[in-house]
Structure formats: structure tokens, C-alpha cells
Length: 218
Image (tube, rainbow, N blue to C red; front, side, top):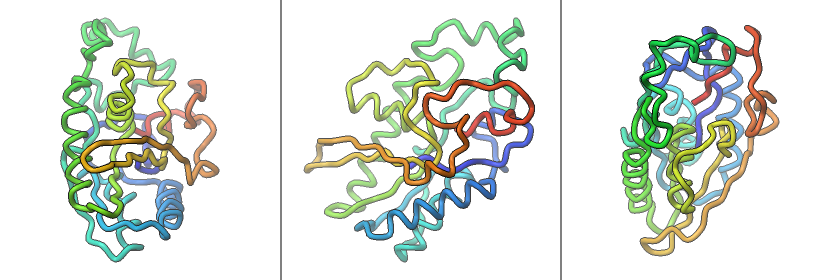
């Protein structure tokens, strides 16, 4: 699961920075997904150590009477632009100091290698599978790591257009195991009616201060 919307009035690419919590809308998203998952046979709930993921996972764990576990392998991807504004029209891409980080989109050169994300996310998936063997587990993480591990499982290239990721806020990307092997991948959006239109998959980037604070829900 990807976490819900984050309170980010300054429109920063917050990455792994501490102190970024769910917005009121984000909390509603988390509650909606917890309600959606109530009938499921969930015996293990684990989240990234970042606040937004912990807060998203908490109502799910509570609904199933479970303690919330933490796995650092579910954390957001590292990024050299962390702490900076990097939205449409803010000039970040026009700053020559940033160009050296944009030379290789295949690795990528501006952050944690895609292959490293695959390794840690597959480790987290397999650990959760073992913890909930014969049942279901919920893992709460972040858009890029979720999309990268899904791309790996579905045998797609790892480099991609970020605008085309199918991983909306509070969405569920499901991996079904048969024994030790993943045999299917699913995707659903139980809280899509709560997701602002400009943050839905495939939405076009928008300019303006009215949307800047919600530009990055990673």
C-alpha cells in the first residue's frame, strides 16, 4: 500500500526527511482503506519507518488487532533533491547546479539505484510473506519503491516516466504468492474518490501555488 496524502504546505520533495505527517485528508484515506481491508485475512501489518507510512498503517493494524511492525527496507527512495522544491515551473531544472544529477535516467543518477530498490523491496515482501504464511500481509511504503518492485516482478524495464506510475495515494498493489513464487500482481484504489484529481495516475502536472503544496505525495 502507498501511504495517504501528506501535509506539505511548502511543496518540498521531502523524501526521507522526518516530520512529514498525513494531512487530514490523508488520515481519511487511511481509514477508508482500513475499512476496505476489514474482511481480509490479514495477520501481519508492517510499514516504512517514515511517519506518513506509520500513520497510514496504524488503522489497518488496529482493525485487525495487530501490533504494527516496522521494516526499514520499505523506506522512500533516497534522492539528492530531498528538501528542495522540484515541481512544475519552480525553476529547479533550470538551475545549472542540478544538471550534474540528471545525466543518467537509467540508474538513476539523482538518487538510489533502481536495482537497490528492487533488492530491498523484494526482501521486505518475502519477509512479510513468511510472517503471514497462509494468510495475508499489508506493507505500507512509498510510490517509487512500490512501482519499481512491481515493474521488476512484471518484467518491465525499471527506468520509466514518473507521470505514468500506476500507484495513486492510498492505493493497493497486491502480490500473490504460490509457495515461494509470486504468481500474480493486482492493483486497486479503495480511496480514489478522496484523491485530488491532479494527484491521480496519469494527471497532467499543474502550475500554481494552490497545488504546489500537494505536488509530491511520494
